Image (tube, rainbow, N blue to C red; front, side, top):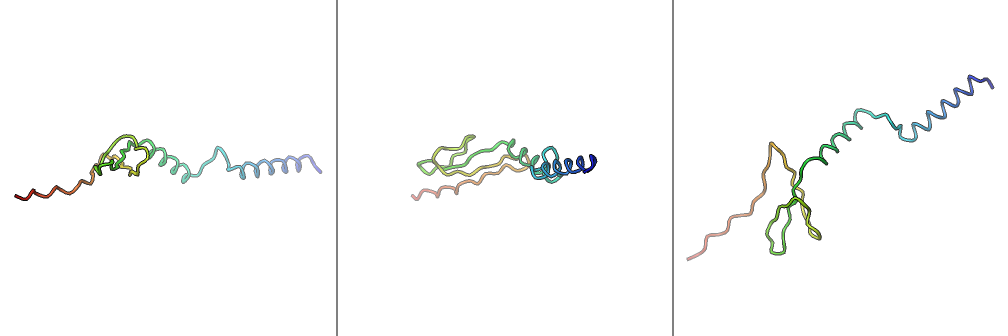
Amino acid sequence: MSRGFAWLMALGVLAAAWWFAGHPGWQTHEQEYQQNLAAKEAAEPKLYRWRDEHGVTQITQTPPKGRKYTIVKIRDDQNVFETAEPSPEPSQ
């Protein structure tokens, strides 16, 4: 076997190992976009909306422990919260 062929085979084995390892150090534009999008979403401030033991809606910066909650994303162009229905007028 010639020396050039041996080098070519070794290069092929290394290239295959790099490819099957997930080709570290190289990303497609789609992969880069998805990573940037995930980092941007993780950096955005969030609020947590949940109900306390009296049924009152609470909005806090930290999630409550042991309760269901929904994440409210804060956006500069849209910052609207659903509000409760107004209380009925007391009858006289």
